[in-house]
Length: 606
Image 1 (cartoon, helix red, strand yellow):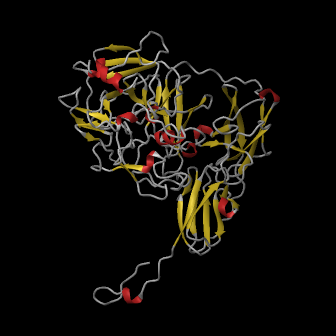
Image 2 (tube, rainbow, N blue to C red):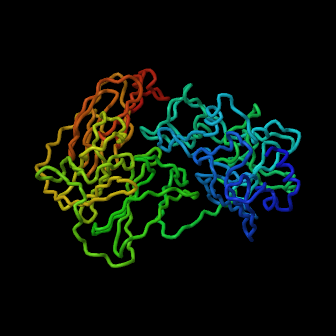
Image 3 (tube, helix red, strand yellow):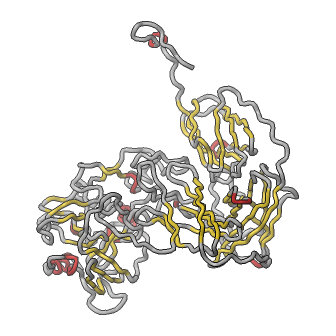
């Protein structure tokens, strides 16, 4: 249906347009185009559709993550929208609202990201417009752009209840207040967050020009007609008394412009569905807002491990972020007792974090542990594993588990917990990829053995859980491993004056960035703590340099003179990441300029 059809429906609107604006399907059926039904309750208008229409909406109506086929959608639109107070809800990852013909208004900015890291998000409208057709074809929404002779029609409603219009109101075309940042490198977010090594996006280039990513834009108040939500207060034909409304934003050339229909958050109140039986996690950011974009590590933004204190119960689950910025996942504790819940995540600009919480759960009585049947996997290791030493564990996979697939980007995951949950290590296989490069773990056929590097800080009886994917099932196989007392401690090397210090902990490199003078060799004094971590090897891929770092001591490593610029380094598994930045040496002070205002030499403190 074209604009004339929409105008016909708009002419029939009642006092509350949200009740009657919808374009109805011409025949019953669950896969008919347009809206199937509209029900009005005391609080909401409930709109149901298959999410399809005969009208081509153009790139603005193409969902970047949902297939272009019939679904069963149910949209709840508030009858009486209200401005949000306090924190504004984020737009859901799937859709922000619904067009009047029942097609979802998609969230165009979270479906795909650079290298799948969830840090730099592609502008899917831009990608669709430039790559879907050799010659971009306009659609229903793009047809609204030149129509300056009348107020743009109401084209849909956001999930917070406020209407969505085309670009024209009161004879004026609505200009976006989001502007391209003037950047050449993508190492910071628009809010100023300096990203960690390995989290930067690609440099601005012909392949990735400015505007490729949503994070290429920043909101500049007053630079356009619309606010940070991409709306404004306005009087419209359907709301002559005035309303807040979202508009199709444009640029100075009159073209559809970022963020197009809605930005990242709702202007109005949005009720986030609350589900019972959920574990919920909050990740506060430096700006006071909750962090909703965590880096994808092994395909997930957050890994949660739930382990009972007796280590008889284990779960590895993955929360998803909701519109409030809270990470949640359904979970039922299997029996009464005390549990420790670990959340493992990497925020933008930060190291990996592993936080834990103790929970006293009620439920059925725990069952006595019983020996499990031979699962087809056996564990091999050195005759004596000692605390404070790196060791290689080898899991032999038998014929009964042939045909297994990678699990979360690895052939297997191994979680290791000490007695009393005094320590935790989430380890991944050594798969033979070149040092410092990403491990894809997707080679075929599956290996018959999985090698894992581990370190046990103290002696005791350790519990291991080996996880692999077999068909649609994740198989978890427990093991126990005795660890003996540590042997003699390593002799500490004296640290020379002027050495650059680097520390390796269970959370990565501290600091993540080191500054060194350009053009001079530098000695790194690398201290690796005795706690379990995967820092047993440091790799400088660009320099072809690899060095083993034993635990519980300091290792000296000399780097050759570096030109001005940045050099990345990683642990042997590519999990820990850091960088060294060679900077210009400060010029020697001019003796004539080191005098104070009184003419006496300035005093310098060491």
